[in-house]
Length: 262
Image (cartoon, rainbow, N blue to C red):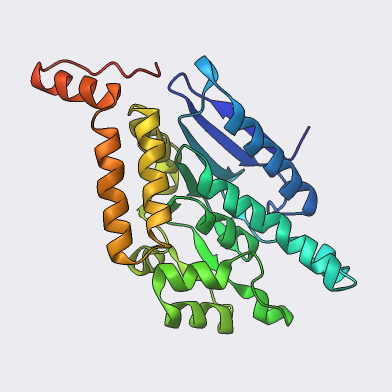
């Protein structure tokens, strides 16, 4: 059995669950297998098309407790360390460009690589038991999978510095307040809440979902003026497409929309 378990619903919501006890460590094998799954999910079409993806950890203790420390200790030179970091950097870039939303269901501790994986996702739903941390400093290390950069962009430089220079965990409520997660729910509601959120997004036009996701992420790399112009021009292309005509006609005639990709 692999380190990741795949489940799906009739609505096109897929869940990838890491099963690497005791704390779901993100070993190099887990990273490679995750990449394989993401590539496979991206290529699916037709009735098995992915419309939303949830990434979570098995059990109640850990989402992903971090990378495998023994593997990090064994890195012998710059080339090996660069390859180690680049593999996860590629996963972050892939998640960003997937044509469907990716939601992290943070079911417990998300330390180091786990915190970084959660922040790679488009959004995060956290259990009240969740804890996010960048504890690399306590090992004489620093984040290498995007942790400090993404924390700074989501919660500000001072929060990123606080996390990365102390290694102290942030609890779920503080993570919500800081913008590190988007929703906090009791542990027994995490799965149902995340699936409901994913199902809601999966019910929309897949083409428009992909376009909105791409527009938002690309806009973050542009000036405000350029991002606004890009959004307007993208809207002008979308509004004349069949799904826009179908959606607006369905609203006018008070009926459910029948998207073209169904």
